[in-house]
Length: 296
Image (cartoon, rainbow, N blue to C red; front, top):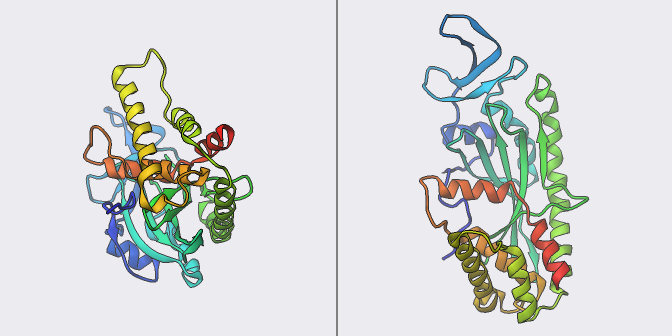
């Protein structure tokens, strides 16, 4: 059985408030900002380190204007969305220190297939990423993950870490409206791509563009690209859940999404599932969509 990119990461949570979720996931530690000193005992100007209080867990170096925001406080605005159907599912912290909460919204349908919208709330304690909420969608029959940005429907809402960060938290509440708009745009995209008909030749051309390589690339890189093309086309042609769409642009996008969501790396590192999850969440498939449209 295929699983989404986050099934094996984080902690499963169940509650109606951020405070509950933070406690269940072990994210209720206190973050502090401390000055950095030279070997001679002099304070380094405008240079501080963020860390977990009383623990040897360090996040990174920040400037004097950086404002520490505790996890419960940073994500507290999400409580306003629970009454709108938001359901908490997972929470955790990546190896690099990024904190996240995964929550879902009510399903919608595309061609009779259940699609589940997800919002991945993210925050860092070193300023490496802004506080943000990323929108992504799962096609439940195969748990393919779609992250697509539209011109008039953002797939992320960002808030900077500054002195005024707390005052800007309300900006993230707009993510609920963006999620609804995003779902509508996904349905429109599916209809558009489903009207695009493919044959073996155009499907192969699209695969070449989606996984390109150059003549002077290493043998390993060439083999990886060739294998990716072959595997994606295999999914398109033979997966039962694509039987009604295998000759369409929508089927091609699903095959690409399936491969990108479920393919394992050639060398699986300790945190490869976590890395894949973050890559899928913080990227989009616009390039794949444009390739399908242009070639077909």
